[in-house]
Length: 197
Image (tube, rainbow, N blue to C red):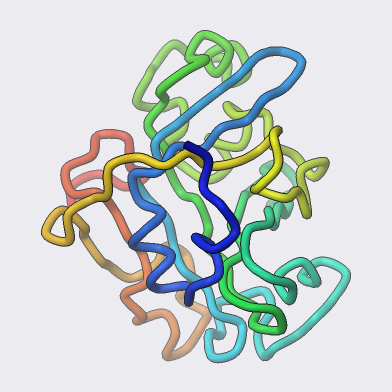
């Protein structure tokens, strides 16, 4: 069952825990790909110096974060990779969840083709990798996740004791925000972007 708008309109930390284990779906002309979310990071532009929208900064790039939850915020980094975020919360509250890793569930051969690798664990073990495998680009910026192209399906909730919370990755520049325990991982998942935790 597809997640509806109400799922996304809670605060970003609550949404992060709820999003773990849900199924990301992308329907394209090439085919359908699906993956179970196993790792993500929360960002809150009101208080978080690691967020693109800090301090409540609405730009052409971040404007989608200032609407209601349930939309895709996609951006380009290092001149090479796309990253997908899920906007959460209410209007005028710039909060989003970065998808860091998913476990491939469906359309795996298409994912392998897009990624140019046969290594299952390496298909979607990073934000850039998962976007490449899922066929997500700037064309999906602002897409309504309650639509029929890019969306999330419900799945069994992850038990609190199976969720690992750590510092986020590559945000050492963010002063006190670098120590926020806002990275959420399903414990023991071999599909996470960083191993050994």
